[in-house]
Image (cartoon, rainbow, N blue to C red; front, side, top):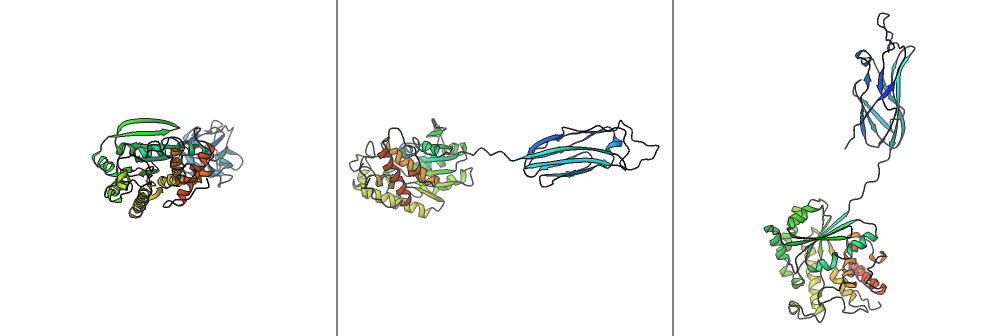
Length: 383
């Protein structure tokens, strides 16, 4: 927004002639003057302001004044008339603006010294990430993701639209019905709040989200026939209601259950972890192929499966399906961090206090290799 500021030059003249030879019966007396002050001013490049001189009389105002600037690349001027002159800062530096009324022997003149400053650095907008999920997005984004970005010097706002066990079908029905049935969990400046009875529309309007993720409930995560048409409908709804034209949609690939899981949906996969994992990989691949609007895949499922080949083994969850609260959740957060930031999470020095150095190394490597190869397991037996 252009800033218009008024500057006044100050000039007190003695006995002065006119700008051109005046007839003897019409002298310019010593009470004729113009005022423009102060005599110096600083402004930022791109700023404009209006000079509005004050004249002692209409007789003086009607004289032919000439405006000039010592360096028009630093400061430019546009003469509207004797009443106003527009000054614009073009680039950093200093220049002098001069106004004068030339006569044959004397002058009516003044100067203004202008310093043009560089624009101050803008405060960077925080990165805004919203998950439309369930307890699996809770595991992934609510605990450690903010810390990883913070350690990298990135301000981030994280939201999670939470309903336990919420499927794509239910998300879509909530969206089209305007159902205020979510817990809106939000992390700002490292502090988490929880607002109940919030609709998807309200959450989408709350922030100018840069990234929004969708995901399937774990029960159906490896069964693509349970994804449609709900995934497509939800994607369309999010795009229509987003306030950010540069929004990037993401699909969160969740993880298979532990081998001894007692989850009621595990028999859908023959109680076979690898069968479930392969179903998840296939469903996530189809989701990305069939919906090019989704530009990023967050391969948390592959990250956990990578970790299961390490010395930790099949000890990544706390109840057979939810991640444990230390290195399990940390591995998922690392996967989100690297996917969104594009930075190698192994080079991020932060880790939770309740995670050992070895566990952190395994979690970060599991996430890193999952981002590199999201549809296949990387052997980490050497860890």
